[in-house]
Image 1 (tube, rainbow over the protein chains, first blue to last red):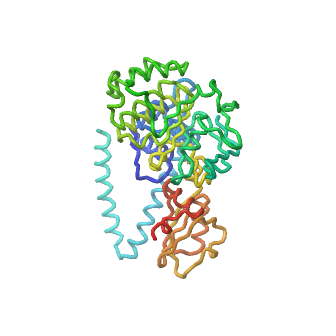
Image 2: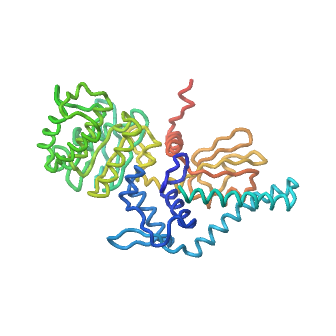
Length: 132
Length: 299
């Protein structure tokens, strides 16, 4: 379900958080779906269980997951603020690209056409990702 | 909890350990790193009660460790040069440790030996170096102690074994609050499993903190400015090291990423990139402050 990117410099717990968030945003993890226990996840990834614990704790604080005592952790309904902040983050990245595009003299049509093309391609890729 | 308070240790006139104080919490993974000859192994041997500190005291759960058998039953020490009785087999070692450690789990030992594909009746002195390490680790896990002291134990294992051992440790941390204390030079690996890191240099502790705190609080930044700047030109920035090559500045500074980014952005850089520090870079920058610098070695 989750792979660790050993070239990523961020703390491991942040990586785990981000991956679970993304799986939940994309609907691969459905609301009320149970997450692997801390023990299972730590053993699968060969990492410190305290790291997994910390990731789960932060996710619960952000409302991405909820936990039932003695039963485990479950995916929560994606909080609207989180979805919004993810969207804003993404549009922020596009803004960073749009500025040099304007400076390079790329026309609005070229830019949006190319974006539309990439968007279609991404839909296909996402579908394949679902099959895996 | 293991508590070392103001430990000194001399070998003749060499001061191997110089006023070390460390606290090791239960159910966490403690990484011990240090420059060569910093005293890592000596410190572990002090923790294991093999050496007696010349000053200060070491307690495990409030009881002193030296010459104290009930306390010694609570940890397993895997030394760098492991010792096995001559001509003995893994089974002999199992039976020996089962007498020393009251909670020794013989079925678990047998199961682990089998899953590591080691023969219980082959003589250990015919095993390879890595296989001997595996036997030690299996003994340690089966001994069911609260603490395991690993002196460069991972360094002789192949990558698959390392993952396997880390997974085994993970299970025991959760199930019975095992506390591994791992001395290693493989910083990349410690980074993945440790909660807390202590850096030793010349017998002293130069840093002991939670790894996540370290990562959130130290950053490497690369930036380019139009005009040349000195270290003093960065007010409000807690700089550990600053290197300049042409107009590119590589700075390692304390503080969280937002604060640092805010300060530098206010100085109008042409380019700014902020990266969390890897443990390896942290080690190099922290020891450099104490004069341990690769450039001095390359004469």
